[in-house]
Image 1 (cartoon, rainbow, N blue to C red):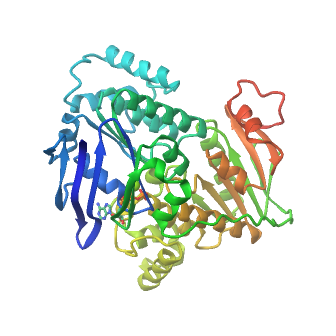
Image 2 (cartoon, protein in one colour; image 1 turned 180 degrees about the vertical axis):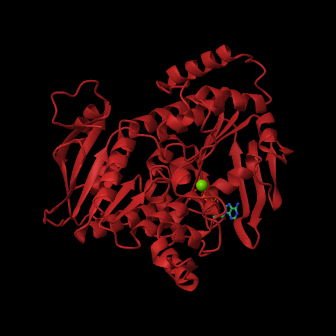
Length: 476
Ligand SMILES: Nc1ncnc2c1ncn2[C@@H]1O[C@H](COP(=O)(O)OP(=O)(O)OP(=O)(O)O)[C@@H](O)[C@H]1O
Ligand SMILES: [Mg+2]
């Protein structure tokens, strides 16, 4: 019997149709995954279930009854929790205060009454998960990974029956992601119904009972997970096969660009220098010190920020305005904006980087997560800087776009440029980096050459309490 049913759901934003006549049935206690390229309509579809956006037409049924939420509160009342792709946390409040805030708006949390009970319940979930979040710290001081965990914690404390995870592992390490997948399976055994959105198809494969594929707002196929291989999924999403670049003739010129402050490590031109490690182990400090060093030495650099939403995407500003913001001197003279050139350049960038839709007057915040990222990457590389600081450059982007971004970094570095790649995705670091370091508790280990360490050895350095036996290159 169908527990949740989307029946002929269409959602338009003005002229633009984000979801087109989508019908999907979800059974109770299953893990149902929704996959599709950036902008396919996954988050939009879930926002209708989560009461955040009303459908333009069509119906949603919950337990065979028409369900028409008017707000997130309505969804809460129906025991639907939504863990968003982009965090909804109050920055200046502590983790605990954020949790309490969510309780005051929720309506089915009557079992828990006071702060100490909330804290106890929170700690119970955290220990079950083997997670650590410093709940007494302001959210602004938590790492992106910790913020994601806090979002999940907040949702689980509401004891929901239906849990929507919108790209929950985009910011988690491989180990954390694996733990989360185990946890999802545990929730399923407790009869919870899980809807999972992810670009990581191996994760999808490992936990899903059913998979629905969206492409350009339309449902392509909804089927039992066992009938689909990872290759099948990729092809259904994109409509073609994805080929990975394995041609690694790398440049060998070695001119020093800069040194990492407080260390004996030089960064060279023509190289991709990887920074591996679990988030929150000094990445922000390393990035800040490199940015300062480059500014001081007047090195032209691009900066793909760690936290896209907070640092790169501004409300109510469209694409060309975001372009202007970054490259002011190119388009601004004596208080005048060269608007037609700016528009033309932005339009070209959007086309080159396959940002969809091609609408440079649309606010960047209204693009899907992956399309925002594609735009930011393109913008940072646009003026041919000497160096690129790329923090999690493929976070939230789909397979095809990941390939594009990876190939761009490889190409860019070949032109005597330096890429510093900070990523918690170990595969990404190993795939792209000529050399890499590992961060653990604000210490830098390495640098290591491509192929010098295997994944297991790296994992040990990432997680160990005391790494003194290993090449220690600096302190952040
Ligand atoms: N509030 C909005 N106003 C206008 N257009 C929107 C709005 N929200 C979403 N869209 C558009 O709807 C389309 C689908 O967006 P959605 O966020 O659902 O994609 P997605 O499948 O979740 O992609 P991603 O994997 O990148 O997160 C996108 O083209 C997006 O630009
Ligand atoms: Mg999305």
